[in-house]
Image 1 (cartoon, rainbow, N blue to C red):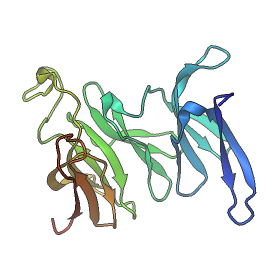
Image 2: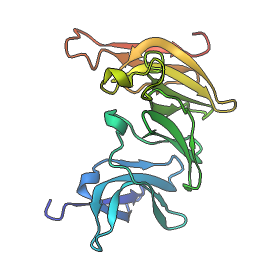
Image 3: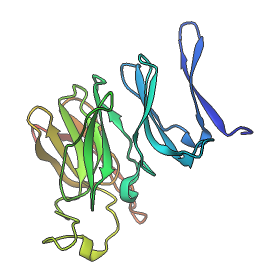
Length: 228
C-alpha cells in the first residue's frame, strides 16, 4: 500500500522458489493474462505517464523467451464503449489471442498474433461483437453480438441503432466462428448477459437473468452447437 506497486512472480510449485518477473502499478490488479504455454503474458495499465512524461497505459505484451515487453494497444480500458467483462483470451496453442476493440461506431473481435506483428478484424460487422472465447481445441471462437437487434451502429445507415441514442448492449446472442473457414453461425437465440464458456469442443454454457435487477431468478443453459 505504501508504494502502490505490485509484483508478478513465477513460482515453482515443487520447490516453492519464485522469480520476480515484473513490477506493475497496483491499479493493474488481476489484469494479467498468461498464455497457456507460460512463455508470454498480457497485462493492462491504466492511462498515465512515466517519469520522463511519456504517456503510458493500454495493453502490453511480455515475451519471457525474448525478454521483450511492448505496448500493443493504446486503449483507455478493456471495456470498449462501456461493454463490461471484456478480457483478451489466448488461443489454446498460445500462438494468438482474441480481443474486443472499438471501431468507428461499434465493437469488433480482433485476432492478434503472439508477437503482436499482425492484427486482424475477425468479425468486421456493424454491430457490437464482444466476449470472445476459444474452444478447447482452438478450432472455433465464440462471441456475443447484438447484430440481430442492431445490424449496424453507423450513423445514417438503414436500421442503424445510432439514431436511437441507445446505450451499449448488456448482452446479445451467441455466435460461433469456424476458424478454418471463418464461417459464422448462431449458436442460440436466447439473449445472454454474461460471457459464455466452452465446456467441451461442441458445448457452450451460458447464463441469463444476471443483468436484470428485477429478475427473480437466473438460469444456466447448455447449448450443443452441432445439434442446435
